[in-house]
Image (cartoon, rainbow over all chains, first blue to last red):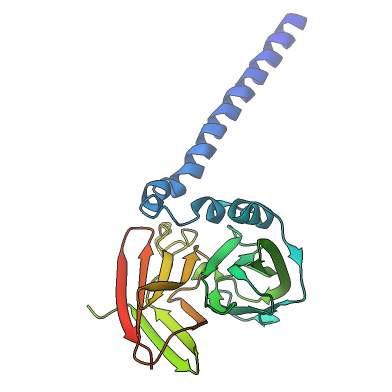
Length: 167
Length: 103
């Protein structure tokens, strides 16, 4: 009796292992497919911060783009609607009274990839940008301003009634 | 083909305000078509503005920028009649360039 029990248990355990292995292979296969053509195409433009745009989370994206963390500042003014009826087109702008600004970035925390856009503010250009972003769902929107080598941020929650995934 | 870039640059005093509207699908790679097939990502990666040959503003975009993107910014040093060159390149290597006069 005991031997058959052991044999049965051993069999199911190894079967489970095999199934696990198969599903892992299937998952990685699926995961790679949609992003497969990306690296080759992105290589055409080496100045574009590909790594930062590929990060899923907001903190990772900021770290990849700037290599440091941001502190909230009331000198960064983020203008975004309280409620966005259409997540596909959310008008968002930022302006700041900070001087020596070199870069402004927009991140949507709960989008599949947090980093939405990053702007280089070159000498003579005013630190103020307006654009339109897609939002998958209700999320915090963060603007990052790089001024004098430091990062400053402002965050606001935007409620989305229809997500931007439908285009 | 007509240019995909529409731009308005207006100089007031020493500040030039630039508004640009570009025709581009900006497909994120997360959306499916009616047949259930994923529409592959197709989006503008970099947009550059040059005034009299000098870069004034560079935008790095991801897939979260809306379809037919719009951007507004201002810079100092442009004068009426100066050339403003705008160019973009997308993740498939396509690009477009146009030159506008500051008014």
